[in-house]
Length: 448
Ligand code: BTN
Image 1: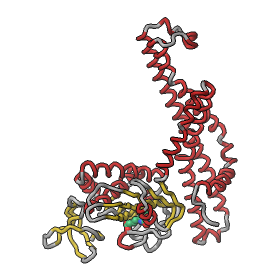
Image 2 (image 1 turned 45 degrees about the horizontal axis):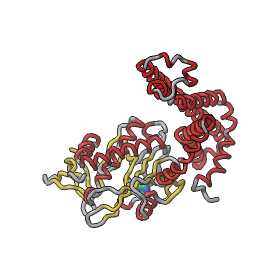
Image 3 (image 1 turned 60 degrees about the vertical axis):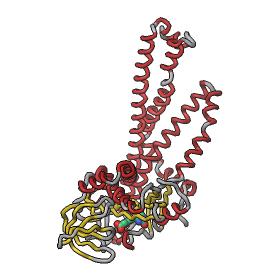
Image 4 (image 1 turned 45 degrees about the vertical axis):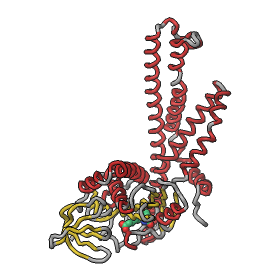
């Protein structure tokens, strides 16, 4: 059967999965009730937020003195300064309580998602352990365990960071609309009339993220989309690549649901010779995101291999379509080995994953979010302040920038030298043993 590629196609399967979780969800009923209570309290407090302003309008500006609130509190007896102070104070209290209620339901829903998926994972794990020993001794048995646990972890990421917040926000929206209809249905209808506009907006922006379960290469898809006019900032993500491509015609090992395989489409206002700087942007962004998420000591080997303990776990492939003087579009493809628990034997001596290096799994979703945030920062810094800050940052975080003995394998020659910083276009400068300093535009660098 073909794998579902869209949300609609995935829905029946997703509902079946949720059905299987029923028992574990029922076990969390008190927490669910508490989170819903916090959520509805948040709705109520949101609806209360305009009332202090109403007090100011009715009793300070004096549009409509009296009213039901004045029946409860002696508002008309207070002077304008006291009324303003009272309104400001109540606004602060309401906003504070609302923030608390929002915090309560966000944490509550995250806890529910974590607990349910952890119980399911443990149950699955126990189940798999009970399978016959002979099954376990087969390589594919271990493979199955890793994949199942990886899939459940992915489900937890999606539930905690996307699905449950989405459900909570939908409930808030529906609750507020119901209350608005109850208070004043005419005004609620006017508010509803704006909904199609939001739908149009989501249509415009949601087209910018293309997610695939299985694809040959995210760079191939991104290049095709970019040629078709996909806008700047569009993102292509895949759970698995069947023909992931690396630099210099190599392939990129892309195990299902274990790594990050993404390509960004950019339409930068840069001269063609500046485009390689985008590779530095991507390398620095990926490094920052990984350091923030794992605390590991990450090195960058020029131009953009990320290393931990001397082994590579992240590679970047930048491809460009350009005219004589202008970049038309650039595709920056980033591959990160995140939760791989095994590296193919032929790569074991040079490659690793964050889980193998750090000893614990990492949320791919958080990493992608951190990476895109950091990319945005470095990208804007490149456009606004030029290459100098990027080059300085590279010098701070890469042990390869200065004074490292390396073997350079360039397209036309191979030689040994010592690194001597980057030039203004991001090319690595190498001091040859005869003293001459040469820039390397493309090629491979290896520590000697
Ligand atoms: C390298 O170090 O050789 C670069 C590897 C780049 C791999 C990524 S994975 C996502 C994107 N799609 C591809 O086919 N390649 C890049």
